View 1 (tube, rainbow, N blue to C red):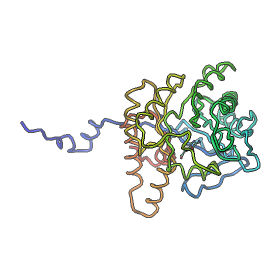
View 2: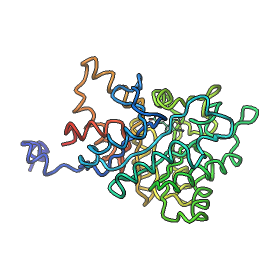
View 3: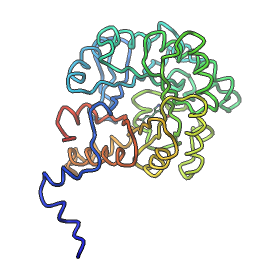
View 4: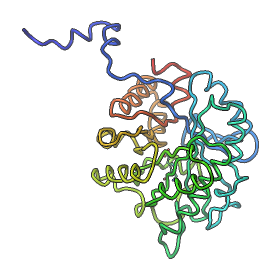
Length: 324
Ligand code: PBG
């Protein structure tokens, strides 16, 4: 008897029948950059992505929800004038993101899953993810600000808060703060394994959140470290995270695979801005088949073990039927 694996690749129906991974719209999360005012403005380094005012965002999401894309992750884009060294704009209960959450939950209720990024970089005048003193990002001094930001989002009705700052012990601190204020049911999706990555470049453009000086290597993970990467996620699980995340995704599929085996929590992969923009740039030049490439990329994350995928491609991929 000879083994002939090609037998199962003979026809589309046969290939479909033995396919091991199937992506469903409910697994996808679309990030949105929310800005003050009406209308929208394009993000030059991310073709197809815009910063959007709250009203317009509420309108736009209607067709996504119809297409089954029912999860969003919100980022606030703050103007320079509102930034300071205490992230006042981010912790404000009447601030941009809480107002966006209220508008979206008011319009869609439980038909839409609203997740919010919890991090200070976009509202700090120095652009770091925590309180800065003498060039150092202080860990424990940052925690109260993250707690206040998460509570403000929960009060506005966020279903899930997603801390992305990489301070130690922030999941435990946020869980405690939420519980104390009566938000036992607000879930935490921790950016548990987040690397110091060049793939965030276009995002920092979009969110105006680049550090003015230095880099994020004293708090985000070193890309060379697999064991530390797993440890970070396991610690966040122990601190009370409801879901874990690996970010970026494409260069870290090994890490996704390992964490998905070592933790029982749902695992998200963040298909970050640089991964998105590379595909868009090559597609604009006509060098690649965008539809096939996006389906292959998102499929690889699911195959590696991701239950959820945060991707700027989500809306277009579903609208254009790229995942079928
Ligand atoms: C905030 C944050 C970043 C991203 C998500 N949340 C940027 C960073 O850490 O510098 C990156 C997302 C992307 O590149 O798509 N800390």
